[in-house]
Image (cartoon, rainbow, N blue to C red):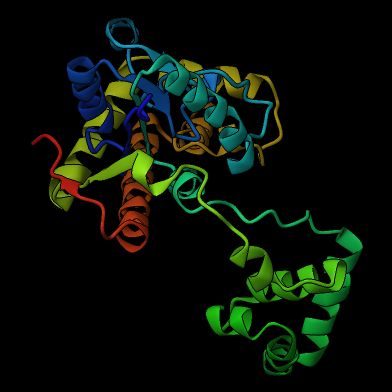
Length: 293
């Protein structure tokens, strides 16, 4: 049996990814799989702009709203969840369509993830102390002796990545670059095609603003209130969703609703800009779709 087509549709928030995915699914019979870290959470139905119930009725959607806000889903956990879905669809001979704005999800499938052991706190603390005592120049010379490929790839001033690289070697006896060299794609290159939805920036920013207005009108405030009432760890991924901090400040009486909406629109545009930059840098050879003006 030939491999079914796996189509990857990536792009920034509010670019029209979900619309393109739905149109593609209706035309091809593909099952839509979520590749957006925020749309995993049932608690972020409004704030993540999850596909509507009607859309999920006319085309099969999977991995939307499957996590609770108390869970911290990593790229690895998403990958371990989506691969069996792809395998099942392959067995059934059905095409798969992955759509979302989380670039690392796509990267994990098309390039793979290095299986680097979780850092031990005592090792990291020791390496941090060495960095602070020696300074970046001496620290880099030490790293260059052990792992020149990593040292060359790390930008000046990137303390966190420098410490990480030397910590990996101290803990495992193996270089970070060696771990990365063993990385293999999780889906074969001949099994997938990808495209990025990339509207003109002014159109994208206007769509971001309209989306926030719709969110306010369709229950974003209640969604944030329910999240805050649970008193969850603010470091959890769901609590970092755009809108939680801004609308939470209004609910706390710190700012007006108008100021909260203005801040939320700005944060949404900033997020979209970061996503645009990421996809331009990481997927330059993927075809572009202009979105929907």
